[in-house]
Length: 240
Image (cartoon, rainbow, N blue to C red; front, side, top):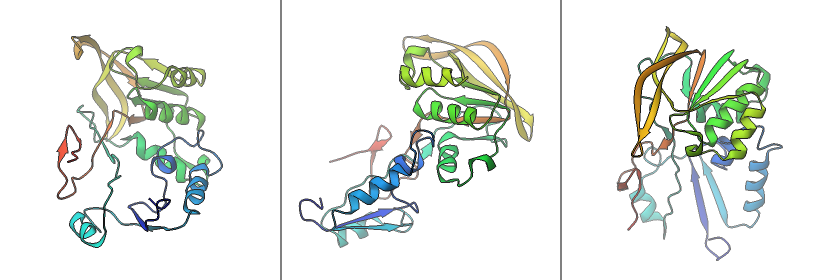
């Protein structure tokens, strides 16, 4: 838009620009402040103002923006994380993988970050691999990725899968979380073996328990808080 001669204002809910590149990709992949340097390079074109700490639905309204500007482009991303829907999910030690990655990316001293001896990551995409590999690099002894379908169905590429395996991460397939156990803080996760029938995942009733002081959820993201005047279709913003 700036290259076409428009004056552009970017409102960002975060304290830094860059979105997923800055907050959502593991530290070992995006080194030497790559995301921040890319933003600085892009802003040198001129005509672009970035206003930080402004969130749609809290600090900004869609109707207000439409009245103040000629056009409004929504690029708010998916900030929510899907629930495990397993007993004990609210225990201490269970957290969203995207929050873990964000904390890593913004930490000045990685050695100060707490890491469990036994870590289990639920999911099969890039975020699951990022959280698992990063946990291993931080010193976790046993790290397991637990995915409810088979290897070929994983969202993470075969390169990412092989990267995780090369770092000592165990990949478990056809298992889904059934319950988390512990006294206030998680100490074990109970996984149920699965089969896939006509594309749908079904539990077999057979379970296995793994030691886990930390469990990371990486099972997909959703739109967090629906802005007013924005209609959803299939969990995504409906366009007209």
